[in-house]
Picture 1 (cartoon, rainbow, N blue to C red):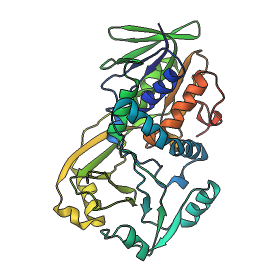
Picture 2 (picture 1 turned 45 degrees about the horizontal axis):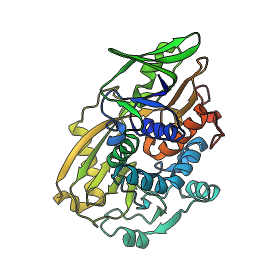
Picture 3 (picture 1 turned 180 degrees about the horizontal axis):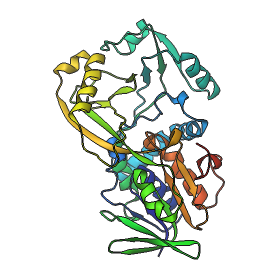
Length: 361
């Protein structure tokens, strides 16, 4: 029997498993498909919420903790796995100054670097941009990771230390006399003293059997990637809710859509065309750059973007860490540490009340 069973093998489940096994726990992780291949793989890897001043403080405090710890985490994962997550401090250039007062007040409150820059500075920062507002917002401290590589690195770092079962869908949580005792798939039973549900967009489905479930729904996001050349752009550029992300090898990611289409994960020609139009409006040279790939993922949408992290009410030993919406990679390190603190009854890194199932959102 495992001490702790983690259901879900995205970045949230992987980092939570790492935290627990480092504390000496006997951990089993179960993933319905392949580890690190759902929304973890599909996102952009920006280590900041987009327009971060629009989010509640509960999101900001997790993001700030994660941003502080990401460099050391990526180094540790690289050393343990042999896979470089490509942590890169690119900076975030927001080409919409309308919220500059709100943004400046937010940055001052949390002591984070943010500048209002003029059109000349924008041209210096990103010469190829065709969008040139009179003012823009520049956040030089924002970094990115290459999220598919982050998932592989986190997987590699716990391989051999955590029992991992892929292509295993949990269909039932096992509860006896008000206490969780494990989980069951269609073919196997996995006994455990404690269970943590980290199943992203599928969390509501799994917890619905218990009567009370978090308000999490799948939100499809589509992205495209251009096969560019290194140095064509050097920063993350954000305009009208769409972003361009330069990878070290020259690829340029363009994202993303927000679509409430249930669990439908197919791509659409309409979304591809919309992303393409935004990309070439911002960077005209992309008209002559091939599109390498177009994909979709399912985010775990939640009200206000505040994740659910904590104990399930009324069932001892059952916990959840899910509902991060667009910020699973951004909030992952802090969410994993906080979940481990709760499960292991340690002093939490931040107050836990805002993330409980019954907290207002």
